[in-house]
Amino acid sequence: MARPWILIIALLVCLAVPVAAQEESEEEPDYARSGPYVGGTFNIGLVSSKAFPGTSPISWEPYPGIDARLGWRESERFALEIEFEWLASTDGIAYGSWAIGVNGKFYFAEERIQPYMVLGANGMWAKVPGAADSDVDWAFRNGIGLDYYLTENWAINGETSFVWGVGEIWKYYYLTFGVGAIYRF
Image (cartoon, rainbow, N blue to C red):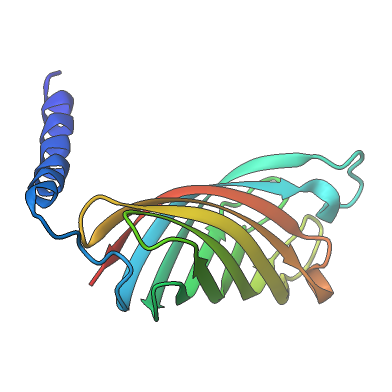
């Protein structure tokens, strides 16, 4: 019974020690340095029912999702990343929704707390009820987020994005709210 608490306390100590040691140093780390990073996020996606035949009125249904990204921080104010996102299969989408694309991140600060705006283009696959095949087309992403650096390399982040399809998937759009972590090399 005590094991989960021991693991939680050990995890908190492991996270706190590098932060405390870093705060003792006189020089502030360069959180906005150029270089590669990887990250992952757990999302809640609010999917519009407009894509589903016979639904009225339009509603937003919450579905879990995950997201993984590989990026390059080019300068203090700009990063470019490749992102993969999956929203879980639901009653409305037989096999879920998949998106892979390229995002630009535009940072507003260079310190430990870094708010940003994200704009991107994705290829998206979605299958709505009654469809024989998945619909595939382009989608666009825009959103805002915040990175909070625990150490020079580790950060936690929160992000919300609006993703909307065009062409074959023009009725398919969703809003995501995610929390995750990134590692800077």
